[in-house]
Length: 115
Image 1: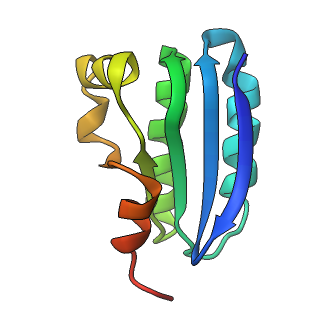
Image 2: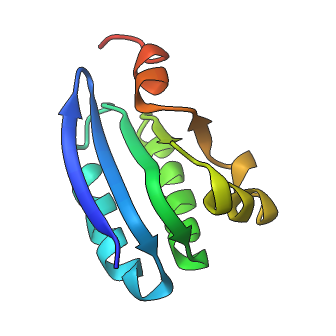
């Protein structure tokens, strides 16, 4: 079961996801994404997957869906810490072309324009 932690860093919200994110966790992952993106402003959201061991296809679809939702609002969602098996799965599905991916939260924050 995955764990979720939502924090605020500088001018962005950071949702950290740890553990395995399996198909059965999709509902909880959706709720965590909804909390992270609930502010209807253009504040960026960073999804930190550095502690993620596994990601299911439903979670990948949710990442794409919420990335698109944020773009429609004129905001940015950045996925960071994608490595190992998680990176392989995201690349195999072609999701790396849809997601804005940075190495780390620090890299993502450095690339943001101050509000």
